[in-house]
Length: 166
Ligand SMILES: [Zn+2]
Image (cartoon, rainbow, N blue to C red; front, side, top):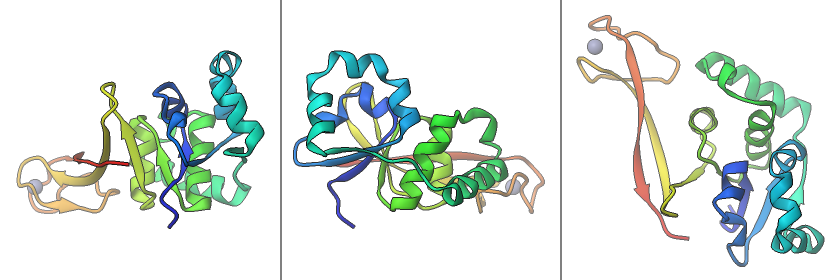
């Protein structure tokens, strides 16, 4: 996998991730709608688009359907906007690293083994490894299991953070 190609969510634009050098970026029309005012004020963004370093591409209906199906399965569908769905679908379709800070976006991506990077307010890049486990007996389960098979308590999802450098 080409490691300097990234799919950018709106949060990645706000965090200034598009300023990373020697990278190629992809985003969707609906994400671009969300960051309109950034576009107006940023010469860098203009240059990225005109030079082809930032490509605007919309996902196929097939990958959107797949993401909607998984988001529904995981219970994240209500928390995802149309723009969120579009960006996860594109990352899935192109099999590239998705840059986002949105919990549900990251959760659905993780389930589909889409690689993600999240950016903290401090600019630290972290990779998240998600797991689903029983709060009481700590047994780990697949992401769709909501109740522990051993003690019957509700399962909980959380993630471990790994610092990474790019
Ligand atoms: Zn348990």
